[in-house]
Amino acid sequence: MRFPTKIAVIVRSDLADWQKLNVTAFLSSGIAHATGDIVGEPYEDGSGNRYLPMFREPVLCFTADGPGLAAVHERALRRGLATAVYTDELFASDNDADNRAAVRSVDAEKLTLAGLALYGPRNAVDRTTKGLKLHR
Image (cartoon, rainbow, N blue to C red; front, side, top):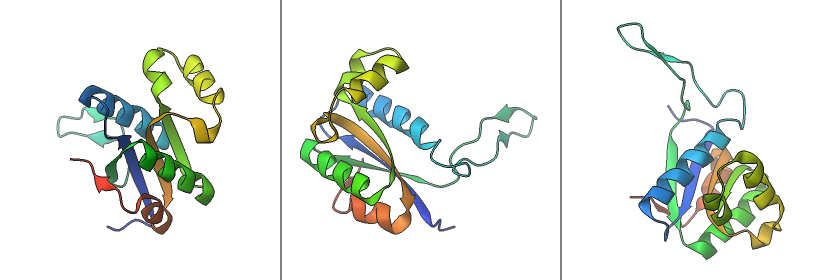
């Protein structure tokens, strides 16, 4: 099935593996709130155990260096895409209030981005992530 929308997560290439996974998880949790229909129905196994619902569409994971991530950020904001951000400062915090304050304290063009997640019309997300390499 081809969806009219797309989810993309972009992480900075110089992060440690644990940081890349952490950033991806946090950013995905933000995108889950982009719209009411982005998450599908709950799962259930053959034994009747219930599991939480997940995104209804694939998530493409990309990598970029710092300047590349900044360029994607600027394009995403310009196009009005639903965007989640994770900055370097969030690695040092252990609570949501401090995380929000850390992001709020820096102008958009000066954020030290560790990663971004984007959601929006397929063509707009494709144009915003053009030239990025899929994460391997």
